[in-house]
Image (tube, rainbow, N blue to C red; front, side):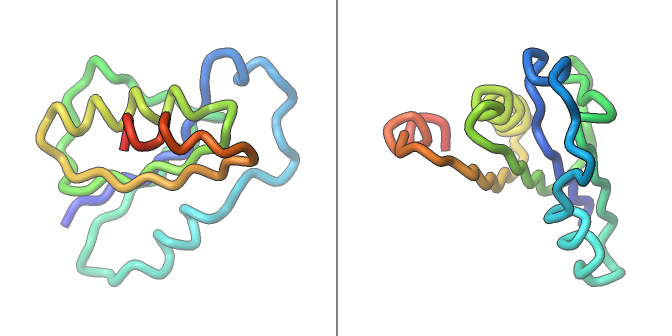
Length: 104
């Protein structure tokens, strides 16, 4: 199985100061994934994901926080539009269940 794991980052937050220690949750998942699966990790804080491009993945996992949620929803919509399975994780400090339900 080909798996893509994405840490979303909006254009507005790309100009902000980067974390000294970027989140490692997706790298940990990639490391724990059985070797028969091919896993790629894209952290948009360091490299962009081009949504105009078609990607050949079976499963896409997206991690984001509140300020990058709309970018994560755009990524999820893109891959769902290609018929891919999408799993998302929103680390949200504020309850926005209606927004998550509309986009999840």
